[in-house]
Image (cartoon, rainbow, N blue to C red; front, side):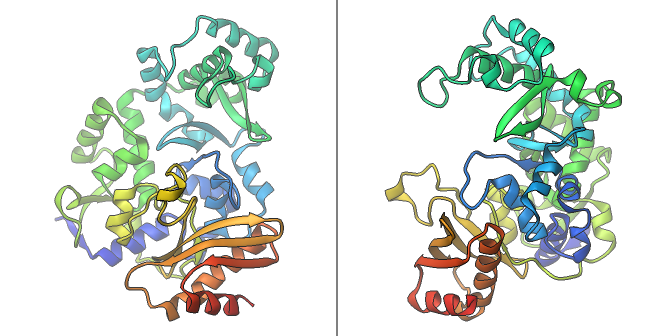
Length: 392
């Protein structure tokens, strides 16, 4: 018999799975957080901090930023960079599970650019002189737009896609590439699971990280295409993933049947909710359809929208409190001042009940990034005054 969950029960399970509910979710620091989440998305935008730092901060509070860096990029390798939901940091022990994607790249024989004939020379350069950055192999750009990569950059990224090289470290935000045989532990390098084994085991990881998920949520987490999505479908139906079917009240259409980590169903979620700003690339909200379904929140990153067409701001960060998304803040930083360029409450949120959570979220974020002053540019005047008063 399929278990039925209320929308609120599903949301609380999701929040616990993602590390936002319960004190035990903070144990183990940033390293444990990465393994809990299965994947942390990377992005070049840095407002208060880069997104991968914000993900750890949102769950752990004022964690030292160097601790976050060591959890992701350290020696010996704790993690590696590869394609999951997007470009992500992934636990090093999951290296074998992305063999299906490396094989797919090799079969495709094409990246976003044509793979240059110099790829073998670049590989030999890494073999002889690695670890290397793009600077060491001739630079990343041809001099045009950001996508106008040099042949050496295209080649090294292709080698990363196909698993010949791996990135387990960064220096000054630059990837450091080395041979997989040197950087990946031998016992992991020697594993060669089939495509089916890869998808099944990754679905378990995604299901555990999401708590409760539809088939579409799992596909989006792993960005599975037709053949591999079909493997997932079979594995869900025959029970190979270990995830169990559940019905969630209010989840309709293709979302009517969801899948849950059985361990997450054993004990009802308890404990205190986090109050925090969320990166728009946070795995709690990176899937817009899922965010709307779980939180009733229409999330959109406007960084790539022309300035005059933005509604909420450049890098709008949702405010999570009490297990709900109540507001949006578009932050900036000027010297030692954290600036909220714009604050907007979600429909139906009582401004009086939003003041303390907003003040807490802004105060803690400011302290974490070393700001001692908070300024609010645009907000409802009464809300602006009340939040600033609560902050002080």
